[in-house]
Image (cartoon, rainbow over all chains, first blue to last red; front, side):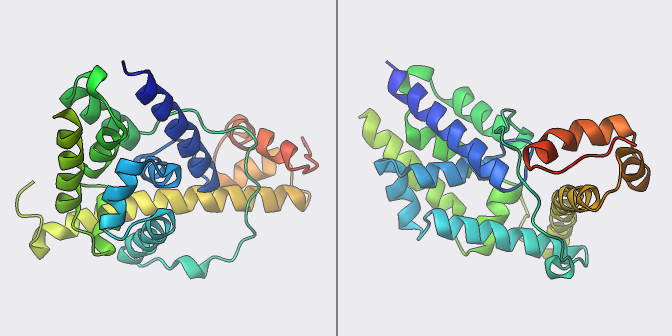
Amino acid sequence: MSSTFDHYLATIMEEGAREARQAGSATIEAEHLLLAVAAEGEATTRQVLVSAGLDHQAIREALDREFEHSLNAAGVSLGAFDLPRPSRAAKLPSQLGASARLVLERMVGTFRKKDLRPAHLLLGILQAEVGTVPRALTLAGVDRHALAAQARRTITGQDD
Amino acid sequence: MSGVENSASREPADALAAVAALRRLADQLEDAAVEQAMREGWNWPQVAEALGVTRQAVHKKHAKRLIEAGVELRRR
C-alpha cells in the first residue's frame, strides 16, 4: 500500500508550498521540495542528508549562496538592492514548477508506485544534473552523486 | 552530461544559472517595488506603464497580495 507515501508526499507538497511562498516564488520548485524534505525530518531521508552535513538550515544557506553566486556571474550583486521586503500572499502557491515536475517524473518513471518511500523522493531531487539544487550542493562542497548513491542504498535496504 | 568538470563547459552552466537567478531577482524586485509604489500613492496605470506591462497584468499579479497586506489601492 502506498497510502503512507501519499500522505508523506502531500505533507512535503504543503511544506514545499510554504517554502516557495517564503522565497517569493509563484511555483513550487525542486529546491523547495528539498527544503521541505529536510524540514519534515523523516528518519531515512534525514540519515542521508545528515551524512553530508545537510539539515534545513544548511540547505537554505547553500541555496542562498547559489543565488548570490549565479547573480555574480552576471555581474549583479544582491547587496546592491535595498528595497523593503514585500508582503507575501496569504494563499500558498499550488502549481509545481518545471524543476519539481521533473523530480516527480524521475521518481515515478523509475520506480513502481507501490514501492515508493520518502527516500525515492529525495533521490529524485538529488538526480538532477543541472539547475539550482545541484549547483547549491556543489557550492556547499557536497558530493551529490555519493549522496544519491546513499539514498539508493537506503531504498535497496528497505526493499530487501 | 560528460565533461561538466572542465571550465569551457562550465561557462554555459554559469550563464544559464545567472539567467534563472536574474529572473528570480527581477520577480523579487517587482514584488517589492510595486508594493512600495502603491503604498506611496501610485495608481495601477502608472505602475503598469513604468513596468512596461498592461494594467490587467500588473493588477492580476499583485492586487490580491497588496489588498491582503492592507495597502490602499488607487485605481486611477
